[in-house]
Amino acid sequence: MKGFRKANAAKLHLALAIGGLLLVGCPKPPVEVVAEHWCPEGFEPGHGDVCFALPVEHGPTTAIVVYLHGMLEGHGSPEEWAAARSATVHGFAVVLPRGRRGLCDWKPELKNHFCWPQDSADTAEMKNVVADWDRTLWQVNELLEGGQHPRYVLAYSNGASFAVHLARASILKADGYALVGGGAPPAEAPTAESHPPVLVIAAADDDAQAPKSKELHELLVREKWPNQSCVRPGEATLRGEDVDAALRFFRHETVAAGALTCEGHVEEPKTADKVKKPHK
Image (cartoon, rainbow, N blue to C red):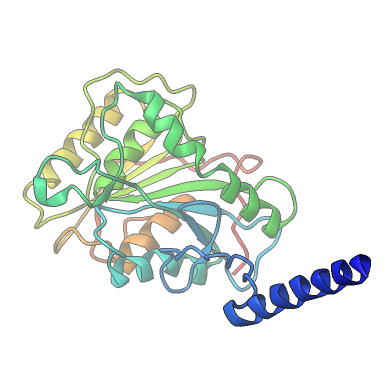
């Protein structure tokens, strides 16, 4: 009789437990929260804060352009992103990293903006920033297939000033740099192992930056860097014609066309060394 009561008690406890679960509901598995990515329209999310876009047709000779944006608030300017993405129409892949919040600290109202490091003495920080791009650069290189692809840097405003440091200290290996509306000449001597060609594009109506762009051009000439300096009318916003000029420069084609007035000369590379044009 005692064993019978124990068996009934165990069944009662089991029934109560099941009933309790039905009342409160079974615990649900944790839901994985998908992080919202900042990538602009037309760009795919890469690793971390880096996005990318591929041309419709690409192959073993397709080149990669790393675009460094200007001072960025929120999700940035759709016009700037569209101009940068237009490189894909001309057969280039575009890698788009984002600067870091808090580096625009020269004004309190800019503390939440995204900018690039500007202290040329702090190369460790710059190297850390560039290291965050490695996985996406590797991913894009693999998607394009065919080994190592030529790499160029197109940079605007605050990004252009950062790009000057990257080139002069060999922090980012690139086959050429194009700087639009930025690129103040640093005081430190260059430590670069090589001298990739540099294109400097200044806006005539930018009274603050245009003189600095001219100083940078003169500095590059003194340091015997292959470079070309161009001035165009208008304000310092990234335009489609700026991107077109940069891509022609990367392809070793003439930049002195249209409304651009250019100084300096970059010699044509030898046939064996000339960079192949990406697929269109």
